Image (cartoon, rainbow, N blue to C red; front, side, top):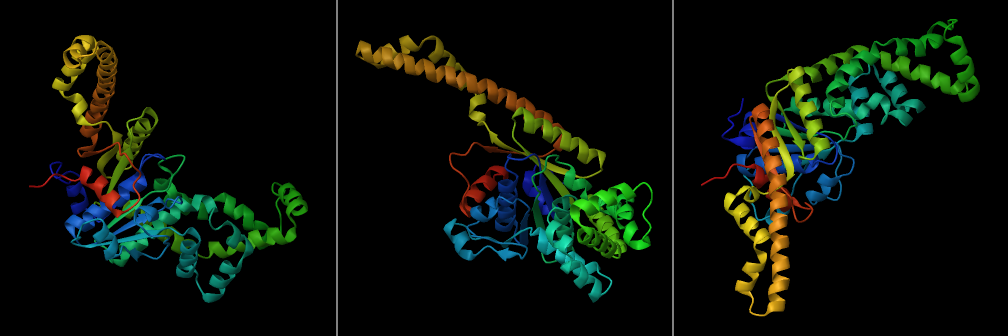
Length: 388
């Protein structure tokens, strides 16, 4: 386990794969980009950030108009604009589900004829991007491919937005199960045997009327061809599962301290522990500043709230100005006290997560959106241990 003293820097230095995960809208993409940028800048080597997020926010933050399956190096000009000279290289790629499926077919097809038949199958072309929640599986598959290539010292993965945060963890196993499922055997049975069982005959009769025989033939051909790649897909899915459990892989759970995301983060930590997957750290976004926990600040706020009139009269010479100033000071004192209560509650939640994660990073509320490499580095510096 990485030293907790080294914080997230230690987590990234000790691993080859870091997977950021959490519920939607908590800042996973920005966190993944910030961690990768800091690793490239401070630790050197070749660092890749792989995003699955279809919103393409990472491309915007890195100053790239668009990028896809092919990894792209972040140009020196972007670093210069951010006022930083990195020790290493930062690369970025975004998952292209269709292109990744095509690559998998080319890899696992037993011969050229099968490969071409699958790629040309109308059903394959139409559903590749939706196939049994393939976004989750193909993300893990792409990660395995990149890691196996040895091209990068560190790969930081931004996981897809999901209804359930554990969907992508189950994707490899789900894919292996699908290829041996009764559903698959049932779908291809009519074309193989030409004998439709009594149980399935009503379905095929209705489907033939609604969808047409050509569509049913396309379905059968598609699944029969795909089953020819069973061994390759299952072996690959098992390899992906082993990669997730490899000690060189760590998960970073990203959340805010709002009730919903916080519950989801705790649930996800439970799932990681249950699956014997390594929790490297927890990153909390949009946290209130520690200054709100300063006892001197709280005492000053109490004075402003309870004695605002006296304080104002000592400052303002004009009685009207003193009344106006008194109201403002009371508002300031009350607001500070209210935020301090929330900050105290957040501190208790952070403490509870720290007992489970060991390493907890916190990013304060930002005044502006992260829209370039400089913005990612500002977020990264909040997560990096102070030096000097």
